[in-house]
Amino acid sequence: MKKALIINGHQKFPYNEGRLNQTLMNEIAECLKDEFDLKMTILQKGWNVEEEIQKFQWADIIIFQTPVYWFSVPALLKQYLEEVYQHGLFFKGSNDYGSGGLLINKKYMLSTTWNAPKEAFNNPMGFFKGLSVDDILISFHETQRFVGMKALPSFSCHNVVHQPNIQEYLNSLRKHLHTVFNV
Image 1 (cartoon, rainbow, N blue to C red):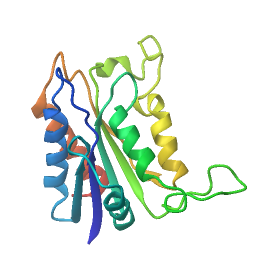
Image 2: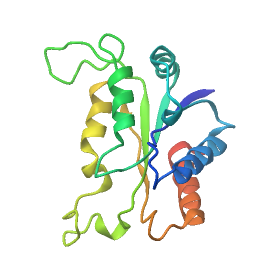
Image 3: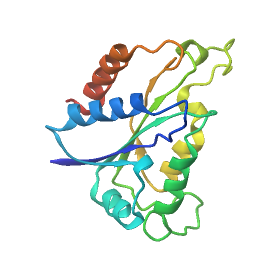
Image 4: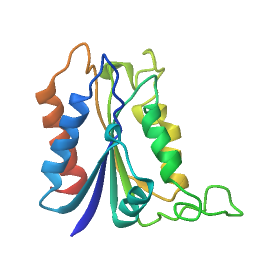
């Protein structure tokens, strides 16, 4: 049985309690539970660095469920990565910069929530000038590539504050997981 680590990267603020990201994380776990042995981390509850390192070493697939704040992942998720992604365990020195990743047999999937509407992406006339969700989150993707992981297709929900449609998000997520993991 394959093993997956699901990380909820939500960072709580008074105006944003993280219910949608937890709902999506729960749905991911529900959809994968028959095909994967699962472990989960909810960053808002804190973490033990050594336990998180062991989870990464154990997992075949890492799924990051996170909101996007100011065109990047929350500071809490960035702090987690900086504490957990340790030299000698996740990457090593290399003569060819970026080729010293030690997680080469692992894959990751990024699942994000945005207040930006879907139409703002992949549109040369839109706010993001034709950039995709993955283009905007390139630093996150390059971090995962640096430690050796391979990207699976990303998933994203849009307009989550002003025009949320939870059922549509869940239906789209199920379809995405079926396509990516054949579950």
